[in-house]
Image (cartoon, rainbow, N blue to C red; front, side, top):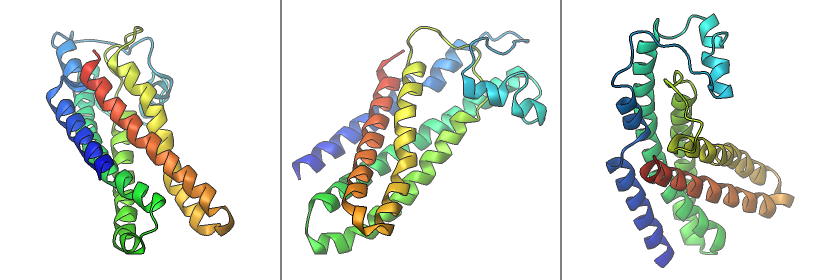
Amino acid sequence: MLFRTKLILLTIFLLSSTIKAQSVVTQEAYDNRFTPPEIGLPDNMPYVKSIIWGKEGVFRKLDIGPDTRIEELKLRRQMLKHHQWIGILTLAGLAYQYDVGKKLYDGDDSDYWDKHYDRHKAMGYFTYATYMTGASLSIFAPPARKYDKNFSSIKFHRTMAILHFSAMMAQPFLAKAAVADGKKYNDLMDAHLKAGTVAFFALSLDALGITFFK
């Protein structure tokens, strides 16, 4: 009960801090107040972003997206704004899912299992869907005006994203494999729990990074 209370309080703190703090979207909007009429692509664009939005990127070749960089930057701000709010929703769902999943894993109460297993499974589908939706908005958003070479909240965000993205990708496959393979059930469910732990705490640290790092 104490662990659950601490988990709920931590999640509430992270959500309130993220909402009140200066976000990546707000910071980019501030930096781009005096964007010149013509602006090119940044030189140090991330690799994945260059594949999609580079001069020879997929979207350029398919003629997908706005006609000008100014419109691209406006679209980017909108996509990242939605990405942020979906991330908050996902974090709240993961807090509940992780709490229930931990009790299902550690406990031997059949009544609790019967009442909460379907909820845990349904929340798993929900958080996976919201997470991937939010991740897609970030991945496919047009490139920023510039990318700072020094340490920043955006660099921290990208680093943590590698962790929670990998964990979120692994979770459903580990759970499905555990159900399909009874001999390895315990080992696979242990890996599933660890993946869930990494996903929740990495996403929580990500929210703290955006809140306190500039």
